[in-house]
Amino acid sequence: MAPPVRPLARLRPPGMLLRALLLLLLLSPLPGVWCFSELSFVKEPQDVTVTRKDPVVLDCQAHGEVPIKVTWLKNGAKVSENKRIEVLSNGSLYISEVEGRRGEQSDEGFYQCLAMNKYGAILSQKAHLALSRIGST
Image (cartoon, rainbow, N blue to C red; front, side):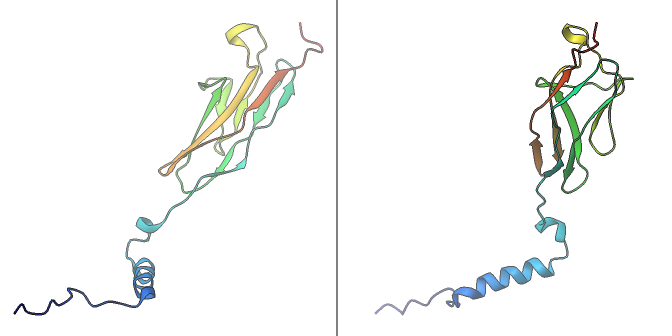
């Protein structure tokens, strides 16, 4: 006759495993391992119309676990910083003197900011930077 089969583990009440996991999470010496921080926008760029040679700031402020890196796109391509164009410490884009020449030299276009941290990335809404035709030559 075969010996009776014994269970390997004793059955536990259904909520016990959940309570054990919660306790493990709360008492873990490495809280960062259990932490997840989503990125979200505090401010996103808005459509703006400016006159040629005027300064402009396109807002972008993201919230989430630091460090957060902000990159700007114009018409889908990365914006390069130079003496006129700077990404501010809060993530906003500052153009000291808007150019309005036709072609590649124009700052006119659709801008988006891309915010990234170690958990992922988010892309802002598009904002149209338009040049005022009044008084332009």
